[in-house]
Length: 223
View 1 (cartoon, one colour):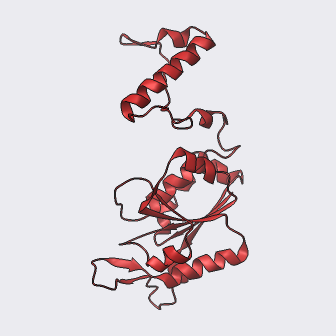
View 2: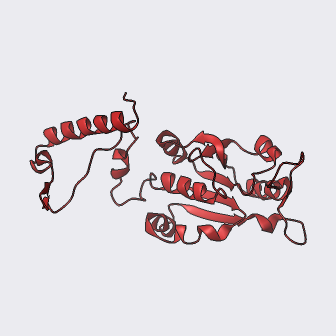
View 3: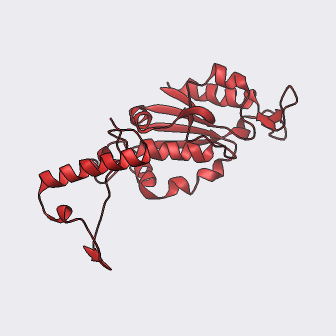
């Protein structure tokens, strides 16, 4: 998989992709991440990429020219499966979407900044608009990083135990059950006996029951 990220603050991604399983995926050439500095595509001598909005609304808006130039240059080199804009008013990211995107080969992610991007960018170039929640951040870099993490970890070969991701919360629309590790008894707080029993059938039943209880309690829905 290749992910091209367009950002006005590319340095925000440096440490994020330099460690953990994401870095291992990059080093092992399972995924390629390319960060594009939007200012490199500005034809303004001061590398200006934003301007005031028409209509007098407060705040600056990312201009269409540098974004269009960057996307068009990328599309000349390869075919992209989808172009995503990270925005608070997009579709809320969920596990189903992560699973879907993890199957793609080439993705472009555009990070907003200031008040957002010129609407014509969204109309002409964007295939999907994704949000990580109903709140506003200073820019799309953190949401883009969250999106990358959520899909890269699903790619075969990225995690040491590939089956682990299959049992994450929300893979089956349920929250994952409680998990425990050593010691078995910590200050009188004990690990549930069933998990120590070695009875795989009983453990599976307990996990399923706990998942449904947690889902009903925390999400108020159960399928």
